[in-house]
Image (cartoon, rainbow, N blue to C red):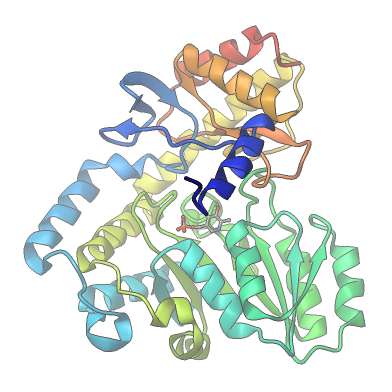
Length: 387
Ligand SMILES: *Cc1c(COP(=O)(O)O)cnc(C)c1O
């Protein structure tokens, strides 16, 4: 008997044949520098838990205590019966953290990005998007039904020409702050200048920067003295929890509450999670956060020196360190080789990165030790497929 689902088999087989098939791996226990992966203890260089807060005792206690007080689910969307004191308290903390008038919690960075772009841009508008932007920004562009002009990676001159040529009603420039697969920073100061000249709105997705980059971990824009029209941050990466937010002026937030469909039509996050997020922002923006960021910077320097010693390029100065190998199969073979030695560094392939640029994405954490990074470098040096 044939089934209409048979058509999926051919496509899956094709993915397999091209070395592009994806499979879930199972982690057990707490997320940290060391994890249990499919029953084996391995060094974790694949997580976005950059400060190691996901397993923090203080956050566990904050979450457990809050669950005791307010229960589990929010029961409804924010605009119906789900807006709880905990959501608003976190939003106030985030606005203070980013020195903006207001902030709005979204259920994830994915929700935030599609919501912001869809709300701010429509069919009469034009969105200008860096070619290496995260998939959620790309999906937001599609959802907006605006004209989308992709500019070459960090190419301010091309963007300037595109903005000048545009006669769209509204212009929106969207970019990752720290690019998720390359670890390089967007030229946010130049982008802000261009937006000011063109009357365009600047949307900066600080997913990999908040908690890690800038004064008190306020992100790349704060480090560059730039105030974007909308700043997107996630609670799921350096902050080690879950959820996301947009920070900006009060009228932006009011607009999003009325227009961002991914905010309006979804159940509010559990209030206790908001309380855990508050604890995380407190830790990450204080002295403990500064100490963790210093530890992380030391590991980044160590890793880059090690790569140089191996004769490998060091294109990224951040905690995201790509080792571009090009071919998909070769990349996955190296990742597998590392795993056999107890090192988990995820191989990244198309469509996450452009064809021919498959890579290991090494994500460093503040809690990695000198010996952890040394061991990773030793494994990379020993690989016959690198260099
Ligand atoms: C991870 C990521 C997101 C999505 O954030 P989540 O909170 O994980 O949904 C958005 N933008 C970028 C650049 C990311 O890397």
